[in-house]
Image 1: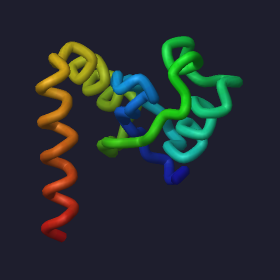
Image 2: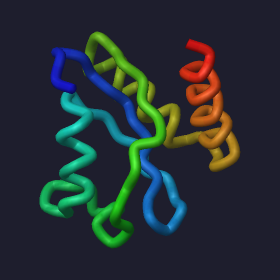
Image 3: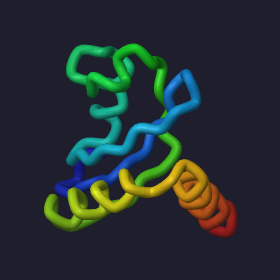
Length: 92
């Protein structure tokens, strides 16, 4: 999914925890997390991970700012965010 866009994403780890990050290539980044080569230190021992949420932004500054905000959400709030995206997608 490399389109010149910037993505904020949440992956669900095998232990049920969530990891939030940002990238310019969503597919590649999830593969990196699962390969453990360039994935985040947090996800290395929690593979496999599954992409459960993402947002698209025009600039890296916007994506990084949103990542910062999502990382500060409580688990319940992250789950509500994930569920709202799923219900939005189901309506389309």
